[in-house]
Length: 204
Image (cartoon, rainbow, N blue to C red; front, top):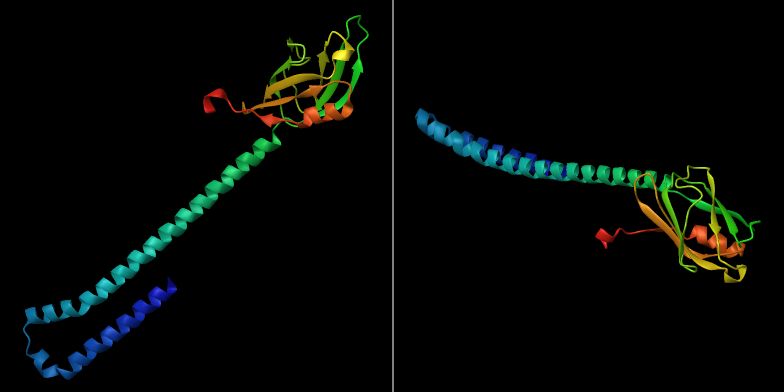
């Protein structure tokens, strides 16, 4: 844009020089002109300059609008990234702790886990292997909270079993874990690391 302005000054200088030469070489003729003729002459001399600077101003304004638009877009992108980063930081994050067999006559496997992320709420658990819903130990788990899943497989021979753990974060974004759980700590650890963002039915 500086180049365009410099070009405008150069053209204006050349044009003014040409008008000066015309006036200097036609002193006598110009001195005999009437006032309305002088007005026409000056209008003709100034009009090209006005047009040149109008065009330059138009392009400069367009460039400034484009720059402002880019700045607004970058600012919007930064805000969106900041919001997304905040949501990721507030996302629940479960970590497997341990598992143990219960003392009841009915086989029960107690699997403990900890939430090291943000609030998890509306927690539901379903045991697909035994086709039954499991009442969660906690419906909501704050950051640092410890909870457990109590599996009742009927027999320990029925383990591992396919389990679904679903919940929402504080922004109502749904997540789920859908893997097998049992007495194998490696598989249990994988279960709690297998968090997936769930797409609502209306968005599918």
